[in-house]
Length: 363
Image 1 (tube, rainbow, N blue to C red):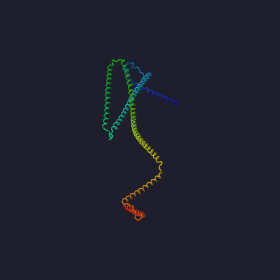
Image 2: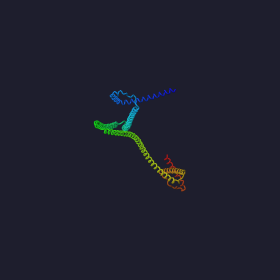
Image 3: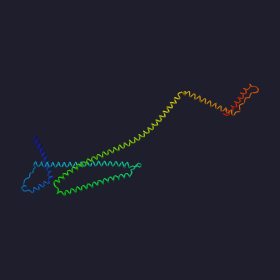
Image 4: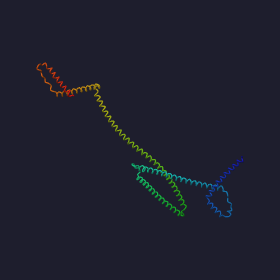
């Protein structure tokens, strides 16, 4: 059992040594491929050496110092590659952020254009009578948009021309510097390197500022859209409040008119009540209703009697006017005692005659 454990330990050690050797081989291979040209030059120089130097046996194993030097060199190269990759990744990230910001701005512009198109064409250009969209407004809207695009294109063209001029100027300066490169000294190159570093740092600062400005612009556009939506909501609320105020004002005027009418009615009712109170005070000493009705019935009955008697009197007057004259008083010759009987006879005959005439007229 102990022998098997020792064998396993030895096997693990051998595997670790193999892994280390593979790692060293990869590092040495990378170093060799990177310095292949230098190795070729060294081989060419070795061919030109003397035969004795050729016969000298070269070492087949690298020393510890050489391995350390190669490892440090490869570490520096790997660190440099990592820094370059990190720098390129940061530039790519900044570029992608700028593209995203520009995309957001473009999306906001498209939303704005869609809103303006809906406001000016879909809703604003609609004919209230027919419900169709007026072609003149659509054409005018498209012409305005085309003019804006043409102005933007002209602006970009001028900017492109300016940048091309600057590029040609810089290229001319570079060619001039290349032509004068033989006359330049080490101090000039050193100064140019310093200026180049300064310009590179300035360009990076400007790029950072540009990125910040783009981000700020995107946030500003978003805030502007939010404020526009809030403004539309407030305008809608303002219109609704204006309508409510107008309706409430009309209702208030109607209520005031009704209050005036009610006040007038109240005044009239108070006057009528006052008159009724005075009339009631005046009629407190009047007789009872039953007595008043009985007296009124008596008055009507007496008026009926009076009318009957007046009618009778009129009839009698008519009969008297149409009848022979009333006999004169004649005293009997034979005796004064016969006068009453004679008058009764004459009155009875005259009365019968009148009754006949009345009966004839009535029938």
